[in-house]
Each structure stands twice: as structure tokens, then as C-alpha cells.
Amino acid sequence: MRTLVIASQKGGVGKTTLAGHLAVIAEQNNYGSVALIDTDSQGSLSSWWNERKAETPLFANVDIANLPQHLRQLEASGVKLAIIDTPPAVTETIHLVVAVADLVLIPTRPSPHDLRAVGSTVEIVEAAGKKMVFVINGAASRARITGEAAIVLSQHGTVAPVTIYQRTEFASSMIDGRTVQEVNPNGKSHNEIMDLWKYLLTKLR
Ligand SMILES: Nc1ncnc2c1ncn2[C@@H]1O[C@H](COP(=O)(O)OP(=O)(O)OP(=O)(O)O)[C@@H](O)[C@H]1O
Ligand SMILES: [Mg+2]
Image (cartoon, rainbow, N blue to C red; front, side, top):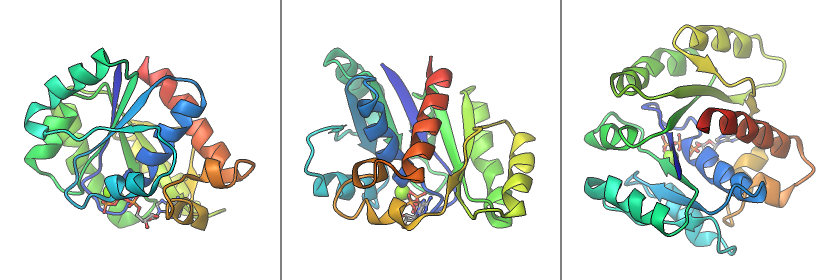
């Protein structure tokens, strides 16, 4: 089993959106059983999952203090990928979750505030000696700042060669517990999520 942690101390960057989308695309691409874990007290990911009609991905309720044991149980039950969503703050939770990661995905919006805030997340991941990848989320089409953001981020670490654009369907598809690939399988958003997943797959090995 692999554990993908989605973390960013900055709020509203797309952690929960990407957690749900990546879990669904991983299963659609036959990665195997995927379990979602929500460690954010806001509970956005669990609320999304509760709206969901499909039975997969699985949702695992875990007690963060016993996270390693819970992950071992999931692995024993046949789960191939655990995706953990995290809260937007540097808390004890973040340290405990990053400690169990095989890979940390750090979504970042292409804005000066978001880029300046990225350092504190990077510090936690580096202190834990974990692999990390940035992904730019919520980009506007043809905006110069997207390329500039990628340059700034690349000074801290690896940037995914896939940009997720700002599209209403990333939000609207999640209203009833689905994802863009389930609502609009022929859309550009689906392709972006697919490309991001394929890239992450190379990093999760
Ligand atoms: N690429 C996108 N295009 C359009 N809307 C997006 C995109 N990514 C995220 N959103 C919207 O932006 C808002 C914040 O996204 P999300 O909740 O995933 O971020 P988060 O990092 O989990 O936030 P928090 O830090 O509060 O947990 C949500 O309303 C979501 O629907
Ligand atoms: Mg969230």
C-alpha cells in the first residue's frame, strides 16, 4: 500500500478537491482499492463522501494518534492506496500525517500570498525527510503568473508538469459527491486530473 498525503498550511488551495478527484481517478485506472482519510476537523472530505452514491473509494475513520496501526489494517484488508487530506494549519496533526507519507502533494494557487506561505509546509516535509511534489491549482488560462509561480516553486522542490486550471466544474461536480471525471468525462478537467495521476504514479513507486 502507498500513502499519499495532501498538505498545505494555506487554506483553500484545493487539498480536499484533489483528494477526492485523485481517489476516484486512481480507481478508474485500476490502481486497486483506495481509502480516503480526512484529518481535517472541518470534515469537508467526509461530507463529500457522505453525499456520494458510489461505494468506492472507501472512507476510513481513523484516530490520528493511531494512524500507523490504522494504515497497517487498511493494507491488510487489501487497500492499495491511502489518500490523506489534512487541515490548513501547522498543527500536531500535520506532523503525524506527514510522518506516514510515501509522497506529499502540496497544492498551491498561483498567487503571491500562496507562494509566500509554502515555506512552512515545505519545512515540515523536509524535516520528516519525505518526498514532495507541488501542483499548481486554480490557474487562470494564459496568465503569466502561472509560469512565474512554477519558477518560484521549483526553487523549493519538484513541480508537477501538470497545471490544474480554475474551472467551476471542479467545485460543482463535488456538490453531490462526484468528481469532474464522473460528471464530464470528456472535459479538460478530467484530462488534467488524469495527467496529474499518471505523474504521481511515477513518484509513488
Ligand atoms: N481547480 C479549481 N477550479 C475551481 N474551483 C476550485 C478548484 N480547486 C478548488 N476549487 C474550489 O476552491 C475551494 C477550496 O478548495 P478546497 O476545499 O479543495 O481547498 P482546501 O485546500 O481543501 O481548503 P481548506 O484549506 O479549507 O481545507 C472550494 O470551493 C473548491 O470547490
Ligand atoms: Mg480541505
